[in-house]
Image 1 (cartoon, rainbow, N blue to C red):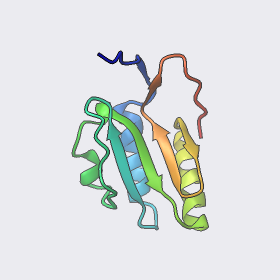
Image 2 (cartoon, rainbow, N blue to C red):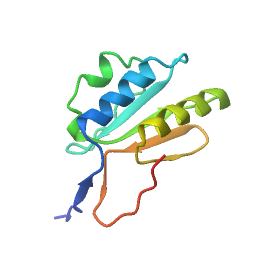
Image 3 (cartoon, one colour):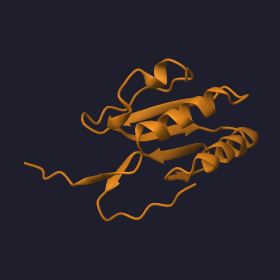
Image 4 (cartoon, helix red, strand yellow):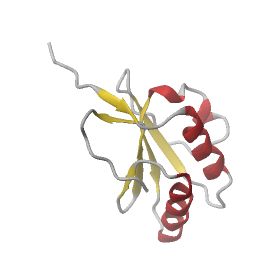
Length: 110
């Protein structure tokens, strides 16, 4: 049997809702996907922030990835997320926001 590592929660429903509303208001069509903490399920990419993003419980989001293919989209999304002050990392084409990390892990905030 595999031993699961303890996770600490970094995000709450209020922060997830702030992201949803801010990205929904973004002038670009930004796609997202999430990983569920309990099942490990990674959703397919989705561009609908108003209803689809809030369909499931925020409490089980291990991470959220936001696809940022173009430079101007990436810059806009980074500004939005920095204003909300969320734990995450930025790569060339994806920004990942963490809802949970392993206990004792260090996490930068955007």
